[in-house]
Each structure stands twice: as C-alpha cells, then as structure tokens.
Amino acid sequence: MLKEFKIPSPGESITEVEIAEWLVEDGAYVEKNDELAEVESDKATLQLVAEESGKISIKAQTGQTVKVGSLAYTIDTSAKPPKTKTGGISTPEKQKEALENDNADKEKQPAKEDEPNKKDEKPETTHQHAKITPVAAEMMKENNLDVDDIISGLRRITKTEVNAVLNSKEGAQQGTSPQSKGSRDAERTQMSMLRRRLSERLVKVKNETAMLTTFNEVDMSTVMELRKRMQNSFVDKYGFKLGFMGFFTKAVSIAARLYPAVNSQIEGEDIISPDYVDVGIAVQTPKGLMVPNIRNAESKSIPEIEQEIKELAEKARNKKISIEELSGGTISITNGGVFGSLLSTPILNPPQSAILGMHNIVERPVAVNQQVLIRPMMYVALSYDHRIVDGKDSVGFLKTVKEIIEQPEKMLTNGNDPAKMLLGL
Image (spheres, rainbow, N blue to C red):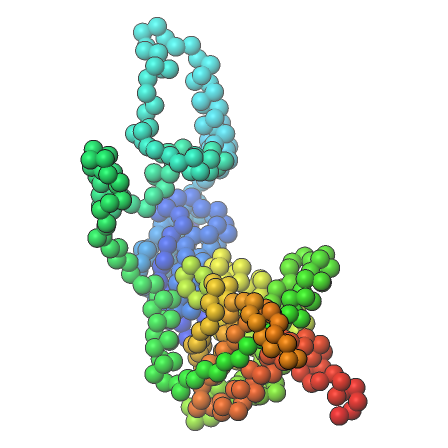
C-alpha cells in the first residue's frame, strides 16, 4: 500500500519550510521512526521521522521551499526489507558480518594454478598513494576506516583541491613550500531559511527599537567559591555539574520582578507586563543562534534551572528542539564569555525589551575596603529598549543582578537584604 506523508506544521504562523537535507536515499527501505530529513523553518531546524516502514519515494528535493501540508514523501508499506544471502533482514551490522564472512571464505579457498598470485597484485583502491598524517592514521584505525572511506565521505572535489595538488607538485619540483601560492577561490552557499530570518530580525531590531546598553561589573569570588565547595555534592545528587548560568538566570528572574518594565514588551500601542519571567538562553548551534526558554524561572530552583538549560541546549544542538520551546520568552541572557568575549553590546531578541550579556571572567585588581585585591571579575551588559525601559530601571535592574550574584544568599529572600529582613527593616 502506498501512503502519502505531508510536511507537518512546525508551529503556529509558520506556512512554509525548506528541505535542508535528506538523510536517506530515494528508493531506500526505511524503518518506522527512522530519521528521514532535516527541515528548516524560520525559527528552528526540525526532523521528519518515518511514520511507517517501507520503501520511500522522495517528493520534495533538498533546498526546495515547500508549503506546510504539501507532499514530502511516500512510503510503499507493502515493500519487503532487503535480505542477506542467508535470508535474514539486512541491517548494517549484518551486512558487515556477511562481508567479513565472505572475505574469510575467500581466504580459505586455495589459489588456482592458472591464476596469478593475488598477494603480488596491488590493491584495487585508486587511493593507495594518499599521504596520511600520523594523527589521521590513528583516527582511521580507531574507527575502522580506510582511505576510500575518507575520500568517498567528502562532499565534492573542487578546483581548490585540484590546485592544492598542483601547487604541491610544483613546489616539490622547485624546492619551495606548497603554501607559497595563496588561494583566490571563494565558495558560494545559499543562506538557510533560519539564517535569513535571523538576519531580518536583527535588522528589524536596529530599525524599530531605541536600543541602548548599560554596563556594570560583577565580583565572581563568592559564586566561584560556592561552586567549587559544593560541586562534588551537587554532582553526586543531580548527576551534572553546577555552572554559572543557573545563578544568573535566577538573579535575572528576581530582578525582573523588582523592575517589571524590563520584563515587559510593546504590542501595538499597549504595554504587556507578564506576572511571570520566562528567561531565554541564547545557544549557539551549527545552524545559527537559537533561544530556548526557561518557563517561570522565578519559581524554579537553581538545580531545576541548570537541568533545564542542559536539556534545552542539547536539544537545540541536536536539532530536536520544538517550536514551542523556542517561542515566547520575556527576557534573554547571552553568554559571550564562553567564546572569550570581554565586553559586548548584546542585541535585543524581539519582541522582548531587554537582554543581559555575560562575559569572560578575568582576574583584575580592584579596590576592596581601601585595599587593592586581585578578584575574578566579569563585565555584564544590559541592552534595553528605551521606548519602554527608562534609564533608572535599566541601571537598577543590572545593579540588582550584580548584588545578587555577589551575595547569592539574597536569592533566598527574593533580592532583599537578609539582615534587614531579620530585623524587620
């Protein structure tokens, strides 16, 4: 029976997608729940999964932009899976086993007198003279790969590769280095739908918001000491490491409740001020920047936040993230420090009105109680939409985040001074 399968809707308001890559060959036999293709929308990269087992016929080609609901592929469910010589179902493991058995049988058979000695013949591979570095050779050995596997795994041979070989030969003849001639080649690739949409959003932010940035610095000593002292116990209980993002996410959620304008957004001529804080965490993926959200961060503990960040980041990088997990958000955090950034002005994630930028932790001399001490310091930046957030609120928000990180016990008192609460002040 031939069954048709259409492009599913990735989420509300998305009307078309782009076929980024097919993971199976046209006409191949697929099993139910096999991953078939990567599909890009303007928000995320998703995957098509086989809903039935059978022979697939691809109807939407790689790079093609198709409407949601249009035909993606068909599956002939009456087709039988390919079988090995022994009659079993052919799987990669069984195919490899069958190949090894065939090779073993051939080695056992005596050579015929009228045939040349096979040991004296050169291997049939056309890549027998390829030069392999020691590191590459070790990697190939560990993964049971030969030169043919590597060559066949390359996407294509361009004039860049041909010129590299020609330059290498010419340099060897003249006694010069093969790198003595610079390349003038350039590769042209089409922007993905996700990258195009991201570009449009960034330009729109610059054109349609009154974006400003305010800065401060945070002494990370207390959090770093706490993290170091509690790391082993934390890992033993939760099974993953304690990072810095959980502290900052919690601090942002507390500060956002104290300065609600920073957590608000403009909708037409209205200002929407949520009573909750959904913190978007910027995650860099091979396909571009994605911002999954921690829902109701104000009501979650640091371990809960850390675990959710870990799960969402893995989903985003492995293209398993859903549109729902990327939608919404009332304020965002981006951490350029993981790439070594000392200071930056993060750009807003519309329609949000603020984004916190974290940066690299650097030991610097600072004045503490009239003494110059070396402390691990981090610059933090808050970019905000001045149409809705006044300077007083933006500075107060960032100062509150700084105070909470420097005195983590304030997280237990929603940003208030524990001593004052103790004394009823």
